[in-house]
Image (cartoon, rainbow, N blue to C red; front, side):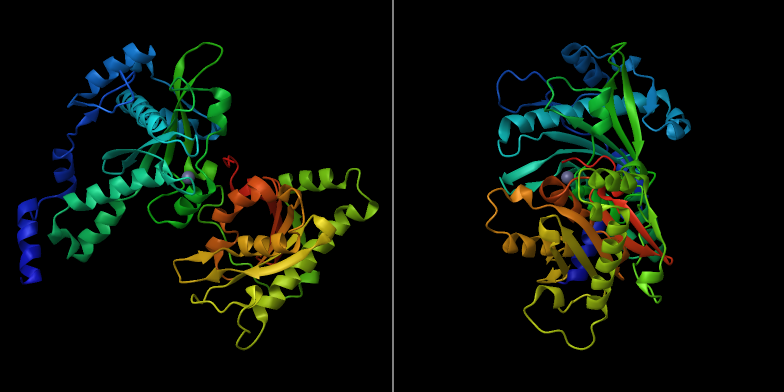
Amino acid sequence: MNPSRTIHNHAGKLGAGSDPIAFLHQKNTRTLPSLLPLPSDLIRFSGRETDKQIAQRFKKEFEIDVDQIREVRSLFPEAQPIADKLKPKDIRKIAIEALRAYTQAWKNSKLTNFSNHYWGYSMQLQTGHWELATNIEHARDCAYCGERAAFDRLWNNKIEQVPVEKFKDKRSLEHLRKTLQVKTIVMADAETEIPYYSSVKAGKMSPCSECLDTINAGRYYSPETQMMMLCRDPSSGEFYLGFRQMKDFLPVMGKQQVSLSDKPIESLPLQFSERAKTFLNKKGKGKSNQRDTSWWESQIKNHLKAAQAEYRKPGEPPKGTLKNIKHLDSKQVYVATLFNRGDYSQVATRVENSKRWNTPAEICAEIMAVHQFSNLKNQGELEVNLMAYYGDDPVRIPNLKSLGPIAALRGNPETLLAMIENGTIHVRTIRDYMPYLYL
Ligand SMILES: [Zn+2]
């Protein structure tokens, strides 16, 4: 069959030439799942319901009157004016989505037994189109988070509904890309017995480092993407929506830089973040005199120099060594890592099996150190104290995907990261990059 003819027929069926946004709104009726409590662990579908019917059912099950939720409290005071702009109609809709996300995660908790994490997400595109998802765990070590699952549904449903003709025109493609931006993410956690959080728990909720890496490096989110969660004020018992923006979870979103210098690293000034200063003060306590700030400063510069030396190595690198892997991608990042045991250091770059399948530099350094200290009874005793970056791939300085696993076992959220930006050595901690990192 002639392929172009097939495409033409397909476009005709979908309504070629119609406005994709209007088309989406027409299609925005959906089959809704049954709500808690379920009579058994079986999943049933209750058929089509209006938002009002859904709200009524939740009111009964959870004693939450969704209509009473009229308040959005920004967990960052400076963003309160943005939260205040949400209309009561939108707030009510978000509250309903939070309860739906909770139900989705609750159902998952009855089906899945690997991680014991049950998170639900409802996600909205700029077009107003919503989709729902929870984490999918195929096997213990093969899991897919709800944030990414929800975006996958949004993405596929959206482009399925847009006529083929719209993909042939440059201008409409440009418009389409804009409409694929995520406007709102609503989070819920079914690990709790009730679909809301104390304000303490709500304050700690965050996507994992793998999802944050996707969001940070990807093109469908912005620092202004809204993050919402249903909360309850512990003092008054009243419900409200907790409001954040992606930039609260990822303060460096879109601001990461290359780490390069023409000047001698020795001559560059150092600048410590507040969290990095706190780390140095703690590390200095009870240790020998050599662990004072000047010791750390010289370690930071020495590690940057070591990473720089590998980056600048001329010629064809020898094969088979981790620190001299030839990259498929022209962008390179070297990380010099300082471990706690015997001040052991390791320089590494990423290993690329293909552009798509690669092991980040931070993890490669960790693997080499684990090999070196394989006789340790408790691998948690091997910690990362510092990672110094030199390279020209800004989104991978640091590689956020690596920081979660490293903080979970080899370090902590206050582990130091050093890089050169505009002639200054900046020293920060993992938490400076992901303040609400979920471990
Ligand atoms: Zn995740």
